[in-house]
Length: 391
Image (cartoon, rainbow, N blue to C red; front, side, top):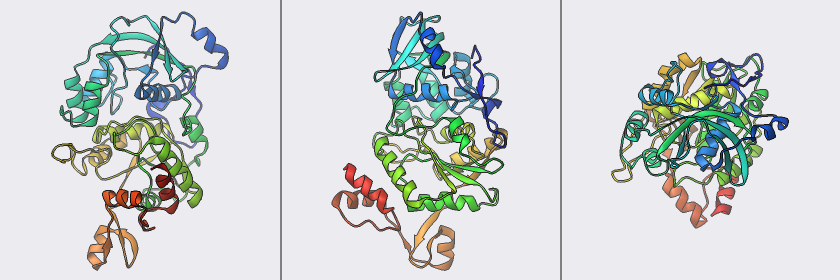
């Protein structure tokens, strides 16, 4: 992007941000009024736009300094790299149906009564959304939530250009910036990122705490539990409710090797491409390792129930790009609960003939709504209490 605001200082002993510099596009209070001079129009952001504006402004999308231009957009769609060759999982663009917005205009981006950012439009084009869907999501089917999103929610035109942050969105879940998260991390130690978009149950907790025992993680390493709290699939639990489950659980476990923070990111359910996007973002937040779950960020056909991506497609794709990012992956263990030994790997349970207990998501929701007792091996009592109170 044109113009180059100074990058935020990063603590020594932590991984370098993507592209080498942690971008900070937020203006100081003394510069805000001057930046708003000469505004051509005010434009209200969608919830997804607001997430992208925030991650641009605080450096979550470093080294981007604004919304992508057409050449970068098309390069990312074709081959998950910008036109300069930098890895990027998904394009970052601003959309509109307004035919009168033109390059050279300065837009004041607003969201729910707040003035978020100044956006200097430097390019406008009409994207080939069929190619975008096929390149980014591997399908043109409207059964895929992100294909439906770009076809039915996003505007006809995409805009690229420089962004200057004015204020961050006010959220129920406070989202610390990459620089703020980095201040909480131990220098010289590995930081394992755990991404989720649902409440954390016992199996998740076992998964990310056991990741600290992986042979490629340092003895003093920590886990950053970093859930996405922006727009997601239509049937997912609301972000505000999820936030309350995370806060209660953090208090309950009080584990000094776990850091908790929240990410203002809108999910695309893009499987392999999204896994790469998440790794890049978490690198900017200071993470050296990333847990790749089975069928990460995957989704199913609403008609056939068939998965859009293979169970290990995201794992394989992310692992292949990890070395270029200077990161490492930690494969997600396939854990099951057994009557005899508690949580063990499925392979261990099978080899020893242990009795595995299961509870499906559908059964859990039915028991939750019916007021039935939820087994503690499946869900933390504190999480269950929050979920029940939200019904």
